Image (cartoon, rainbow, N blue to C red; front, top):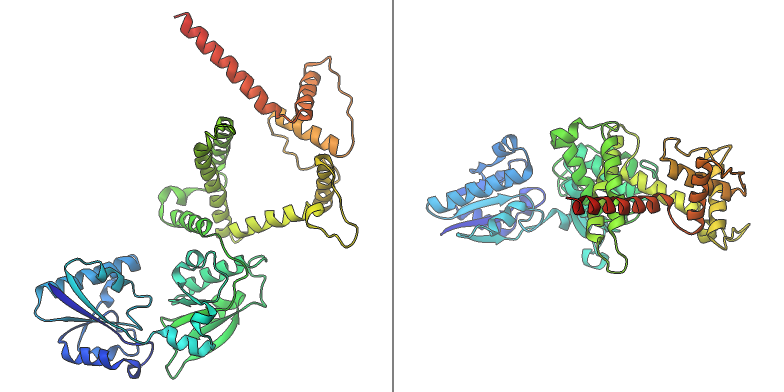
Length: 440
């Protein structure tokens, strides 16, 4: 069985390498260092590095697995222990150590070392246990920080695009539009323990412009604006990855997705029809179809973000603010001119009045898509008429008049005319099928 000894090089220069690590380096002849890009890496020389893998691989995970494969093969085939030196502490943000632990026929000894986090606690003046600080990966910030309010210590902020993604995720967590919280600050920690160490505050909106990132850059976030839902963040991240890596997703535009959006909407409607509130059957199908529809919404948001227009967070924020402003009887203001709504009809009246003011529309009819199906269009018109107290003159001698009256009667009974007619037609269809079978 091969044996690998893992040592940490500490967060800065060789003076921060522990005595135990130095002794292991001195007594072990077969030495490997993950990368020479570290201020203390020369302390392991002579050694072989894995820097070549970073240039060849397409992802960090691929690099780390290749490193582990090489180390395991070296430990099995050679004579004596293998020493593997990593930046910082082997126990903090070191994926290769996780993978080495999973190798079945490999003996592993890990010598703890000083981490960049130890210096960070000193520089920001916090006790991580008392403050409840969580350590997250900057490359997975939108997901790993989801549901968190802070404080957070963000590691591996080594590229401009990483800082940009962190900034967008953080600003989206504040109840503002992206880029609109110039007053919110984040602490930047760079090259801690080295002569050119820097610790400074920067506005979130300037993070990816004011900071020149390197492999010794981290962030300290005292407080997030609001927690992000983890599963929604994971889903949005997946949608973005498909857009970047899947040929079909890469070809799509807002226009090309129109048919898919319509199809998924109708499939949701069909799933709704199958739900039985008494037996609770049909909900599994509804959940799946709602997911398909959500994918279309997130996809359009990704396309809009690429165009620099809005993000999924902006969509969520927009509907949140709209619903809040359209329900003054629920959310106020209650101190002056309070709005009351005793029933659903008054809610509709208030809604239309607020909507007209916000949209600057001259008529409640403005904004109704003329291409809606006729029954749905009539249903909208009846709602609008009721909201402004108009009682139209309907000639029931005409087919159109009778259809309009039927929609109005359904609405008054709390029914959806479109759904009622669809179910009725489906029942007739089943009668036709039964008749065809009996006549065969």
